[in-house]
Amino acid sequence: MIRSTKKAALTACLIIAAAGISSATTYLLSRSSDPARHGVVEVAFGKPTKMARLKYTVMYDKKPFPDAVLLYYDNGVYAILSKGENHYGTYVIDGGFDNPSYTAHYISLPSVDWNGKSVYHRLRFDTKAGTFAQQLTNPDDANVPLQKGTFTVANNSIVDPTQLTWDTAQSLGQ
Image 1 (cartoon, rainbow, N blue to C red):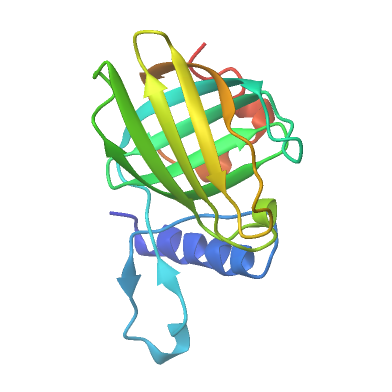
Image 2: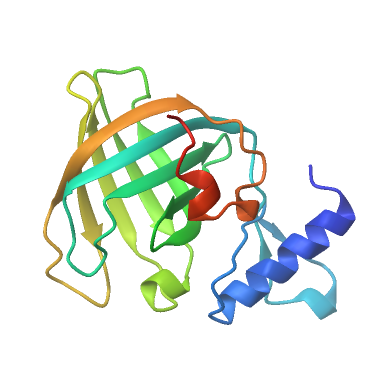
């Protein structure tokens, strides 16, 4: 569990993110009984589990970032970083990282990356081939084409991804 001073600082980051500022943090879902904190949802990163390095070969033209690092946490929270994006959200995996194939469902928290809205991604991973296919559902664009690429999975040791930038994250898992 996050210490109270760190928790307060992380909560402030979520409020900043909701205001549309690019720095964001996520917290363990809870409802505050403090009237001064009504309207704040807290979500904390769980324990780091896995990390996926994504290399897009077919991209969405509005997000032309070929490389990304996706960090997974045991409570279903994720962070993704690329040259042009840095946001957080929740995920559920149907299957597992060691299965021949698995599907991951992601809902991003509202962020400046998505015009202050949430978007939904479904990625189907073929572990044997090392490939993935990604479908994005974006309320601002009903015609997002299927994206594709390759991936690798490694262990994630990053406890606090809010401290990462693309410059510090791009070498993770290599």
